[in-house]
Picture 1 (cartoon, rainbow, N blue to C red):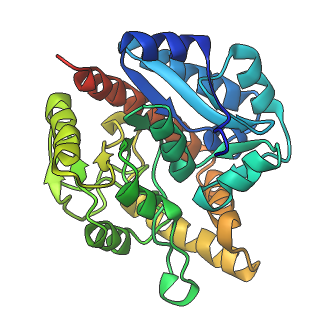
Picture 2 (picture 1 turned 30 degrees about the horizontal axis):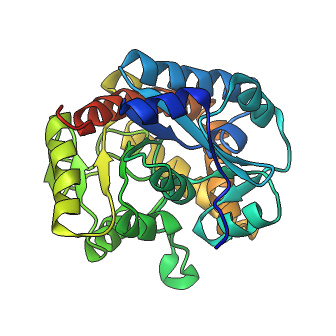
Length: 305
């Protein structure tokens, strides 16, 4: 049987051995989310936020055919400056590893790698989901299936606002994925605190979320949980402000024939331009907020907590 090329950083290995709380972090925000050096500064800030909240950060990426769980400073700096980095999901993760490639992990791929490393909590920005027009394009993110299969609790600011959020929630329900809002009953929409839709569940205490994760395992249920943590009020962009800009960005993408994995990066970049940078500022704020909550949930996951 082929051995999994999995390498833990010294910090993550020590935390794993001692049973300390660990929070997985994705790497596409570094390679595909923003330019250097802002991407590196943001990655370091998110890691620092996890540490300040009492957990150990484990940024995950594939480097030269090896899954890195936790990035040493020089490796993180190198990834932030790298070009031509693959964007890895469930479909292409194994192929990248087999070919000795380098890639950043999406939500789905980060969940897979975190689970293999024994990490139960993962903080990200927003999950992927059902794209607008999916009834024609069938463009649905692998993140949704991963949430139904892999036992990791994912803390996100809801689904990305560029998606069809009602259909995304319908698919999550069909797949049996718990969707848990924190601090409010409405489902958040990434840059906005409210999507106009109710969340199926609400739990405000990290301890309750941790207990629900463990109870799914006790029941023998596959998959994880989506914890929908709204962006702080001071940092949000109102949904009504964004709606016409998202529609314009989508029209621009359609006009240029952009599809598949290229859609999300294009729309995010176009919205950055249309909002004069406000979406990126909000994105950073919500990721930091998610990191703090994920650290508290990870602490509550520790046996005996």
